[in-house]
Image (cartoon, rainbow, N blue to C red; front, side, top):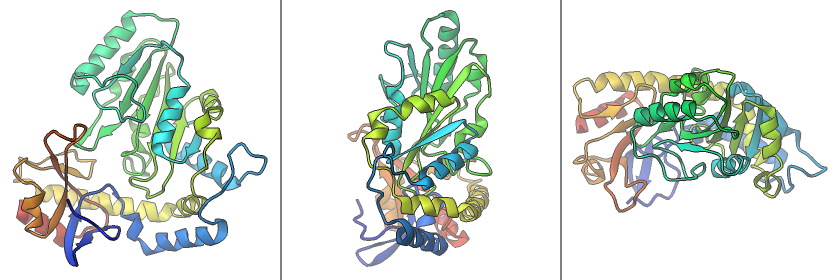
Length: 342
């Protein structure tokens, strides 16, 4: 374990020694983009760090509704609700479901949206089974599908095309915390890959902290009435809203996000070309996560001046998952050093 005393970027300082940093999830590296930091400072000057009021107060800050409209446009959904965190957003979404409705939970669901135990099947087998069961059982209550958009620990981007085969109305809740800001040409997340069937109601929950570097969460809904229900939950009414300074920076940084996303897209291609002879490395072409062999652990890389991601999840007592996570701050030289270490 490495004890850090400042936020890492392409490198991290540990006991006054600089390491290449291939861990974390600041995919776009926004925390080290000077223009973005300037926007955060401007946001603090304008709004302060905290807006000490409920969202249902008679004194409202237009910045919140403006941000929600922006996120609705980005995800191509009817309405969006901001929350303090992605975890809070997930819990709020779950609270609006009908009691005793049929739940179909994928093999990988974040605790924010988890209701039962995750499926033990592969994602493909679970998807096929779910379609078969839903189509063969007509229920008065709309069945609910729960899943994350991807598994950042195994570099799997899940295929939701199976939803096209469902013949009745269904609610699909997807945690897209590691997809929003990263997937798609505009960072619209998993939404651009989802079927547009009219019988599917989508509730997309996400944290804005992963790629976008904003301490906040949100839910984007395909049906506005769902968003109206969510705004009546205590998860929305009884908590302090996200920092307005951060949301100001988020709204003003659209060009910066686009630039960093373009950089990362190019770097992924470059690095993947360097991995042609490394068949033991598992990855998905659209994700900046690279699964390393078990023998290449954090000690192996630290001896070579590199910090990787290495921890056991979801069972802390299980085997560690070794990953190299790249971000938009890394350079060609960084990738050469990492590849030579492999």
